[in-house]
Image (cartoon, rainbow, N blue to C red; front, side, top):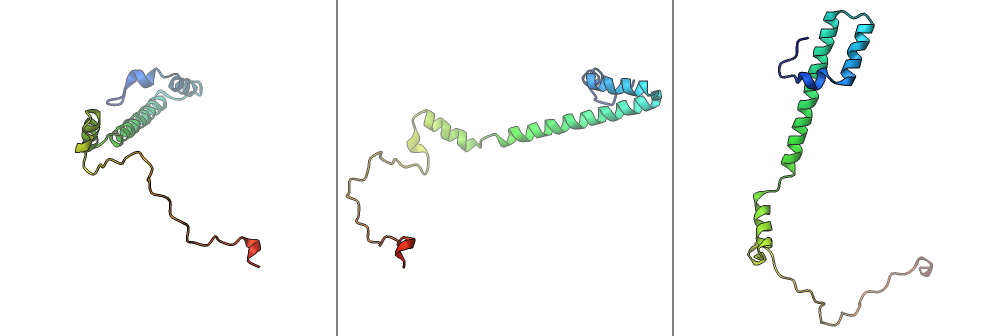
Length: 115
């Protein structure tokens, strides 16, 4: 049995599902050439799927990375230097002491009041 370049012989050749396929081909009287061709197609499919998963994982990990500025902001917060973060202002945690204004708008009429 020849293996495709770069194919992991252990990963696919010993896979139980792959072995079932080969056994079925042999039981159907497939020639060695047909079995070899099927094995090569299965290995190519396996490698394509493996490459697609690796590419997907790489894209996912790249999109989850934060920009360097995020790490700089985290460092400033962790060291208690929030005042050095640009665009940040301290908003006091208290209610406005001024009395609320009086309402000047008329309440909307209810549907039954419009008649």
